Length: 301
Image (cartoon, rainbow, N blue to C red; front, side, top):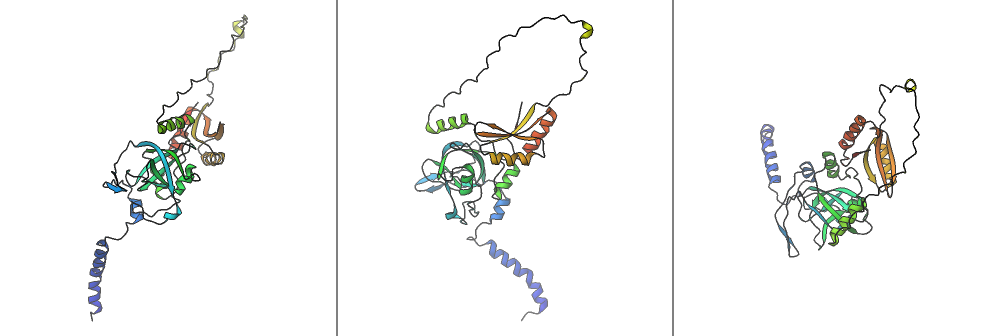
C-alpha cells in the first residue's frame, strides 16, 4: 500500500489522466456556456436533408422574403445544431445556411413588427420557409397564434448590448415598426409583383394674399432689435414608433432620465420622442439613445 508521501506525489498525475480522458471523449455535448462566450460565427460544411443539399455561407448581404414557422415546448432542452440547448422562450431561430451563431432582423409582413433574432439552429426544411423561429420570437413578432407568417429576414451586425441580451435569451432593444409603404413593397416582392408607386406628397394650397396697409411710422418710434434672442428648441429625437401604446408608455418612462419624453399618436402607431430641445441637447439625447441600443433613433424637426 502506498505511503501518504507517495500518494501526494501521485495525486497530480491522477488529475492529468482524468482530464485527458474527458478531452478524448467524442460523445460529450458541446458546452452551451462555452458557445455563449465564444460568439464567433461557424459556417459548417454542406449537408443533405430529404434529398436536398444545403450549403452554409457567411452571407453578410442576406436579405430575403418568405414564410416563417415556429417551434416550441415540444423541443425544449434538445441540442440545437450549434450545441446549445433549445429554450422555446429565448429569442432565437433556425436557418438552413447562415452561420451559427449569427444575427438577423425579422420583419412580419402582417403585423409590421420588427425584432432582432439570434440564429443558433438549422432548419426549416420545408419549401418556401426561410426561418424557423422559437416560440418566444414568434410571440414577440405577433405571429404565434397563426403558426407562422410572411416575413423578411435580413442579416445584420447588432450592437454588443443587443448581442449580449440575445445570447442570454432576452429580447434585444425594441425597433421601429415597419411603415405601411415598406410592408406593401415587401409583400409585392414576395408575390413577384411590382410594388405600387407611392402617392406624391400632398401640398397645401397657397393662402390668398392678404391686404397690406402701408402706414408711415416715424423713425423715432421704431423699437431697436434685441441684441440677443434665445433660441427656442424645435427639434426632437424620435426613438421608436410602436403599435402598442403600453410598450410606448413603458419606453417613454425609461427614457425620461435622458430628457423630456412624450408619446405622439400617428395613425395606428405611437411615436416615442424626446424633446423639444435646442440643437446641442438633441445631439446629446440622440447619442445617448443610440448608446442604449436604439440604433434607429433620428432627429426630427
